[in-house]
Image (cartoon, rainbow, N blue to C red; front, side, top):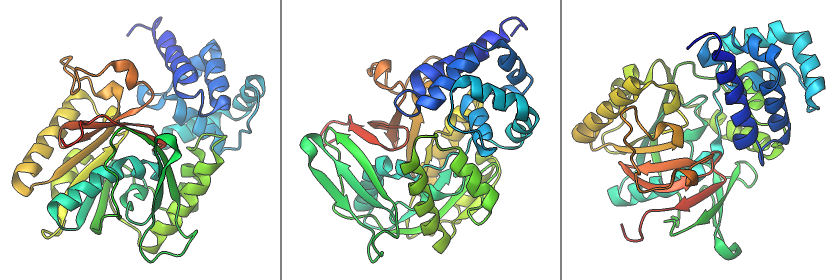
Length: 348
């Protein structure tokens, strides 16, 4: 890419975040991102970072970690001028490791029916696990609201009220909601740099990654951390393609192994995704492993132009995730687990 086109590409990245991703979720981030997109000096500074460090959420979270208040863009610009060296150091040392427990709501229907079909507890292995908060779907509460306002509630067995987060999810279509939470016999995760929920700086970074106005997500995070602290998950540091087979081999054979991930594949190149698919095929053949993918539309289309859902209008996925269960698309999910549209045919 030429020197002349790099700033335009970065500006487009921030403009897209400010017009597509942030509106409806954070008006502050929408305004800041659009301000950055139209600010050549800030774009020039961002371009000094490696390409993998230029994403809007990472830069904005670094500023929030350092205390940037919700404010109009000119005030935010002044904050960046005063603290740029600190922002830069944090961006270069951290990564976007949002650990949204709410995504368990959109994974639960698939997890529950795998457990029911197998007739045994689950062994959960999450790749790109961050702090491992997605590994406790059996320890959280749920409120699924269907069309017309009907609510299905699920609670973890034996838990004290208000000792766990309650995940709210609006549903449409024939979502196969379970009558009870599935049993989990084993849980583990892989991350390049696992976050430690016992480390105050790591917890503060997780909170900084939550968008400014979303206080309910901060409260949910804190309750999810409290649940995980009772039994901190096994987390392995390393590349998912290097660690997956060895860690999967530790899962108890009497449990049904499920490998899952959310918002992870965008961080792999096409070769890395192909290698991961090959490994999952091997696990499925050798172990009968199940695979749940919860990813944004930008990684559904592969390098060769093929798509796992050629019949699905791309506009339906923008800003949302596609839930794929053992190779079959089953649902379209809100990126933080706030909604689930079931697209699998009833009885399939």
